[in-house]
Each structure stands twice: as structure tokens, then as C-alpha cells.
Image (cartoon, rainbow, N blue to C red; front, side, top):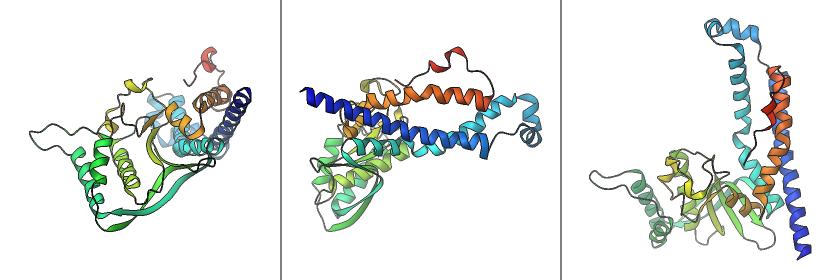
Length: 286
């Protein structure tokens, strides 16, 4: 038991170090961008937007300049971090992984029928509520000629010990409806392939801004999934521990919170040109 505990602790430490390496590399690229390659130049800003400069402090636009150069490279950060966790946990991870197989023509028709029913409500009728198990049972009852189908999943992971493989549709914590519809279609196709190419497929969110699973209340994905009950939905620790092993979510949180203060202080001093306030290091990810 002690050996197992020690091995688990070593794995969690390795996950934390790997995650920190990914985040640090991304943050270093952002800092290089805003400090050297594409800095905020006050004179240029005032020349291009004299009215804005006359009404709004330069610091506001300097913050916006940083945000735009931060958000873009971090657009795929969750996927890269998930791949890193998979490599450290299950053993293999990939981003934008292509999965090909065949799906019966009637199953494909039923997939579209199911999605249309969730998206459109006939006048005078109640909106159809998502129910993954019921929907999948209906779809799998269809047959028809085999049709070649290819699905590109956001993240793919495979266990080197068991051979089990997983596809994840990984979205930001507050995804929009269109993204979620596409993800559900891909997942239904994966579950409809014969033979099945993955052990399971999931719709995953990297963390829950509402805290508990039962409190998740963002309405857009709720059109397509029962976010609180569908077994193919993973939120926060459920996702990280699935792809990286038990304790991965805690390792992820620890990794971010350990290096966060360093970058916050650098941004205050090197980019904004001011001393960090006393509470600068108090903000943490939970």
C-alpha cells in the first residue's frame, strides 16, 4: 500500500511539473511578445486614437493590448495541458486526433434527427430535453449500409496499461451552443461506429465556474446535454482525474497557483510599470 501511495505521489508530482512547463512556456512567449516584439507604444496609441486618448487613461488600453496577446495563444492551452496530463497519466495523449470508422446510414439519419429535435421546438410543444442514454439507444437501433466517417476529436488519450482509449471534446468552461452541437454530433458518431474505435467519448470542461457539478448553470450547453446528470459529461476534477489519474486536478491547481504569483508580479512591474499591490499574489485558482 505504501509503495502504491509513493508511486501515486510521484506521478502527481510529475504531472504538476509537466503542467508548469507548458504554462511557463506559454507565458514566457506572451511576455516576449508584449515586452519586445509587440509592445504597447503610448505615442502610437495617442496618434491613432486621439479621441480615445483624450477621454480614457492610457493604462486601460495598455491592459487591452496585453489581453489580446494573451488570449489568442492561450486559445488551445486547455488541449495542450490535457495532452500533457494524458501523457503523464494514461501514457499517451494527442490533440486534434483523427478517428475513422463506419456508421450505418440509418444511424447517421437518426443522429441528425436527434440534433434537430434538440435544436428546434415545434410550435405548441415543450422543448425536447437532452437525455444521452435514451438518445443513444434510439440511434443504435438504426442500421443501414455502412458509411465511412471520420471524426477529429479535440483530445485523444490511451492507456498503455489497459489499451482503453478515450476521445474528449474539450471546451472552455462557458461554451456556446454551436460548439456544443458539433461536439455532440461527433460523440454520437464515435459511439455509432462499428466496430467501436474508442472505449468512450466525453464532453469535457476543464473547470466549473459554479463550483459543484449540481450547480452548473450555463444555459448554452444545456440545450444539448444534461450537464448535471449525463454520464458522458465531465467537469473539472472529473475530467482531469479521468485523463491523468486520481489527483491530477489537484496537481493542476497546485501547478497554476505555484507559478501564478511570479507572472502576476512580472506583469505589474515589467509591463504595467507599477509595483504590485499587497493583494497581488492572493488571487488563486480553486
